[in-house]
Image 1 (cartoon, rainbow, N blue to C red):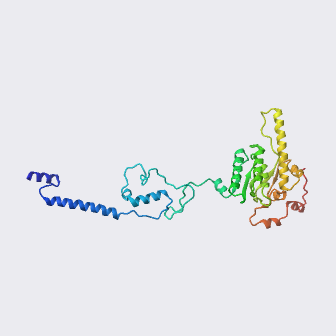
Image 2 (cartoon, one colour):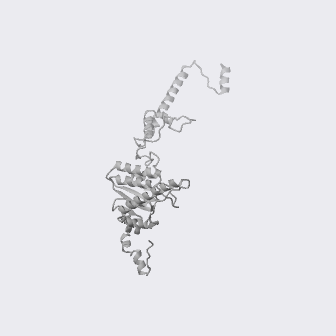
Image 3 (tube, rainbow, N blue to C red):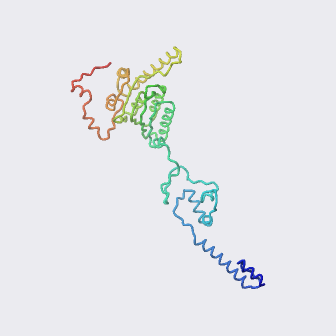
Length: 329
């Protein structure tokens, strides 16, 4: 007995003696105190519950877990490959349904529930169609689809068409699309029940100028420094075509030119002879001249309309300066 006591003291290990009942009683009391302290710590360490958006599945799941089994959040697993609190999800889903942005009273009050949409979609939501490219088949398809969609959504609300396009040609005059691309958008505009407010921003050349003039009468606008230009259709590159095919193409271009002259005369209020005369060469118009020619109805000066109305036209300035204008045609 003495040897065992000395060995226990040397090893610093408490020696258990089963002959003394008081030691067992002390051990049970100690175990009970340990369990009571664990329960007290569990009850006292409650998860704070901030107000949350009930439509947010992530916060709702955390709230339900904190209410039912808080030990899951108090004792998160260590050395886990899953980010904190995501291990309680069978299939983690961080975001709500991408329908609209939900408001919350928590710290992430203005958190969007989806990535921001692209700019054309935002414009379309405001019933705005922006033509900012030459009239190639992809642009024609998109514009016609947007026109049909906006009429389907509301056949009574107006549609706003912003035009900054070089028509079926590029800046250098090279043909990039057929004249039928412009005619296709024009026919779609004429078939709609909605009012179409056209606004020229930048440039409206060729077929784009036709679209600008085809808006609802009285609702055709132009920015102060925008340009409009009408010209004859051009024959696409035909270097590898036989002579007979080139002749066929030339006849088709002449037909398209005649149709363009008739439509421009219809929407500008000029005679076909006047339109054909100015279209012999590229005919550029600023906002004032486009209004005088009948392409638009109003220049968007933002408060300067009266000032510009009092300004004398260029012809009177030339006359006052003694400059004689010679007709080029």
